[in-house]
Picture 1 (spheres, one colour):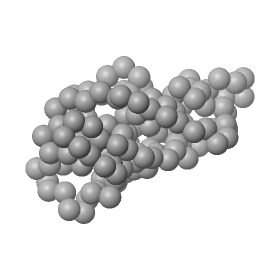
Picture 2 (picture 1 turned 90 degrees about the horizontal axis):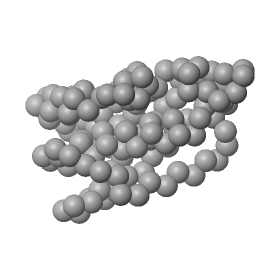
Picture 3 (picture 1 turned 180 degrees about the vertical axis):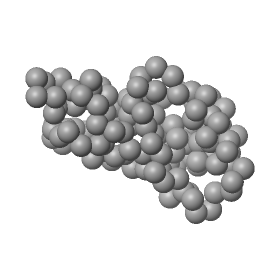
Picture 4 (picture 1 turned 45 degrees about the vertical axis):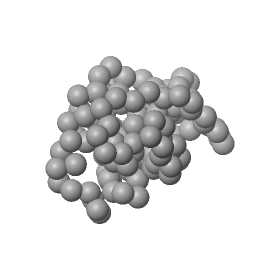
Length: 125
């Protein structure tokens, strides 16, 4: 938790938990690291999110929703006083199918911010 005060961490946790409804709750996300360098979140393997009979191929929409949510967390860390936000544009490059029965990890950070827009980058593996 480098460079982040306990008070800010409590505010982030409160916002994150207050917005955790529906699919996000079903994802059972675990925050592993939060710092000014970014955030890392783990999503435990869930066969309900698979699209094949072997239950080993994750649906791309789940991965996109996961990434979008973790970008929100990265914004909470990077920006003071965030109360609401919306995704304006989200681009995902799928390099290969997510074939595994393992947990999924997302690393994300806010690399630029203006008065009204934050720009994020992240990886899913």
